[in-house]
Length: 155
Image (cartoon, rainbow, N blue to C red; front, side, top):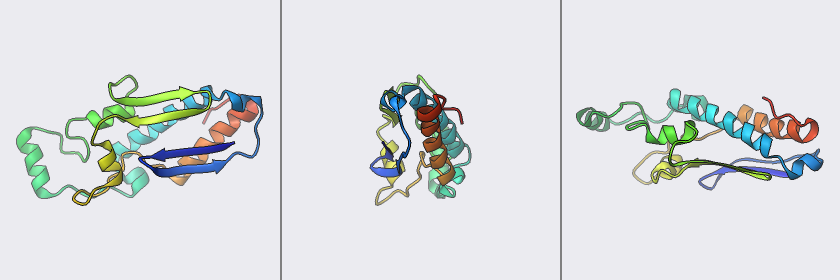
């Protein structure tokens, strides 16, 4: 069984699970737990303005900060309105992608500009709202392995 987790085409995890049995055919409970874990990790990414997993997001330009002040928007990076953060960290928020099946998990945001922040553009630096540390990647794989082997997906 192979575990693949990608964000906007960027593979974050691609690991082969070496042990598996019938629970691998329906690992939805594990994917639910993994999704909750990813929400918590993404919350840390926003809380630390990318320091948690990306080494820190590039600071905003002075002109951007001034424009946000004039418009009464939040000054934190990637949080002008809070919409992107909410769609990645608050279950039930319109625009959140959180879908589990027996064989997978889809996690992300339908906010149109999310991908531009995740990948960057010619005029905008990459500030990944979703990025996984190596420790997080190992934990995700261990959660899935624990469910398949023992029937429990606890962190």
